[in-house]
Length: 295
Image 1 (cartoon, helix red, strand yellow):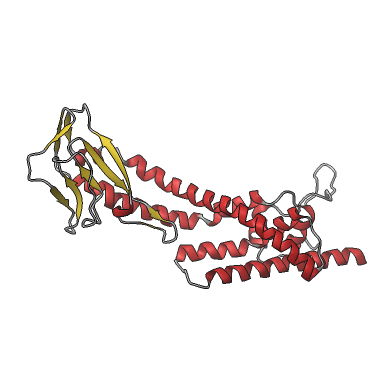
Image 2 (cartoon, rainbow, N blue to C red):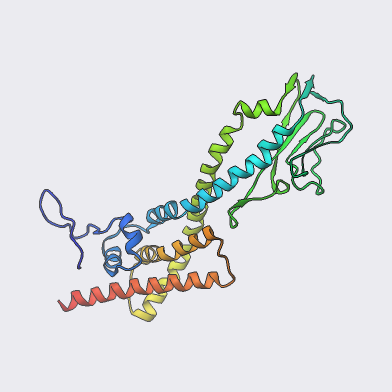
């Protein structure tokens, strides 16, 4: 095959059905190695979903880091900083006692309203007039809007798109100091865990969505191999070849996400790259099969 055989140390012999290349080698060899695709078609087992998961886990790291850092910044700007700007509030028997004209607006250094205190109502009211508002303190509850991240932009949306989380003040007595609350590290866990959650969401979403897509596309790929190359492979092998040969396409897709290079014909470009590499895989397999028959 033109590749270095990996032999059994005890016998010095190469197992016929033992894969020559491992998953991590296939990631970079998929760009140029015809021997890899022969190995995949002849010796690899399964549908290739574990390989696909590894590819997503590696390729999504730069984009997940970028998104995670952007989300950390959003949490600081949209949640932590507004909490530190809140005046000292007293809670008596589960009700906020604040002697100021209502509604009381809390603004940041950019003069944007980030929090509203209104003890005359029991229901939170996030109006469209304050798109940067992330906190609403009513008579008996505190409502926060957790920043939501945009998958395709890799950044967090304004608080207006956030998910409201309510905290009841019922039966509470005491004083709330926002600066002290943040200084004690009460929100540190959010900053640390959320980026990891974003990475998990990106990988799992891409993986589970792609499984169904690859199963359907493999049916078309199997027909494509029979009609144009007279190659008859089991469905499982076609799916495996398609997944491995789509590695360059997946790398290009994640690079576009990371660099924010989104354009109208991007889907067509990705499809063309996938078809070209799958064709390369089929030609590599057919050439090796003919060589073995003529030997």
